[in-house]
Image (cartoon, rainbow, N blue to C red; front, side, top):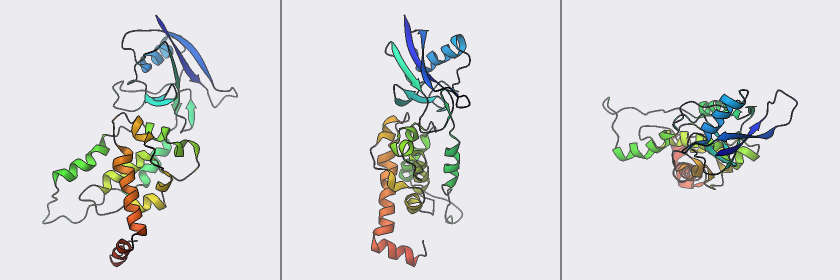
Length: 242
């Protein structure tokens, strides 16, 4: 039994148009999409460009669009006789299934780092509940599937920093020892207002991080309080917080 895998092929350096090419791959029980793509790369067409590393859904390298849904190739089992695989469309194409995700590192650097306040008596103390609250966001494997599925990132030319980077800011904002509030900057500088909380980002997250519910919405609420609540604005003014 063979499975037909349709893989997007395109080299932007050439004048040819991108197209899906069909390959017949011998099917084995439990085969993942990455297994099939690697079979094509190893035995049928060695010119195929594909990025992967661990094959255990821990590195996020093999992110792609499988039947038009952003997924990890290594974590997606083949359950039909035909599968379509394409690159993430939110990022510039390098070749075939490989995209350029360099912009994400620039965005990460734009988020203000962890800035602790003064320790009490030289010791930092925190409640376990506060630690658990921000721990969820640290499970992110930086596959950027949430960025790819986000229609704001994919379709609109905005300054929105994207869901992956909102949870980065939220993980620091919710740390009990951090002394800054990044919510206003997320709204005014990083385009947080463009997100309309469709929850598509958390739907595709392989780590099941509640990106919208636990990060984006709380940051939106903090920004709204800081900008529009007159009492909080007065407190921030007295404290000298811009």
